[in-house]
Length: 175
Image (cartoon, rainbow, N blue to C red):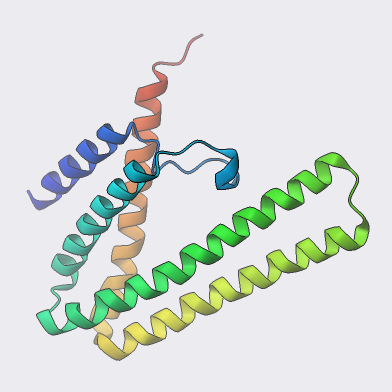
């Protein structure tokens, strides 16, 4: 029953957004200046998904009030760090793509951008590891395991909802 309410809430959320805000494109998004976005709507949907995520995480891990009070600010802090790194990576990707398409970039410029992408990947991995090490200080081992499982299930559930919304929006395949 609990799962049904969650799916209904996420379906409504995605329905209101047309599934666009959470959709993952085949390649990274173009830089913000190259794409039209209703930032207010994006922020509103992001907050709704975060609330659903917090509610579900609290239930699945059976978090105490004390654990939640320590965990959620920590998760927000590390999520913000990861978001900044993903934004930086997206910009670097598009810079590299433009360099390759224009065929005007020097080998040195290409190497520099590739190195920056590699450094970004390393930093993102370090932030993930640091964040989980902080989680270990708050949660007992069994809840750490539940957290890992929950994160993967939630991610898959969201992606599944997005894919269904995309298919629904695109309509049936034509012969």
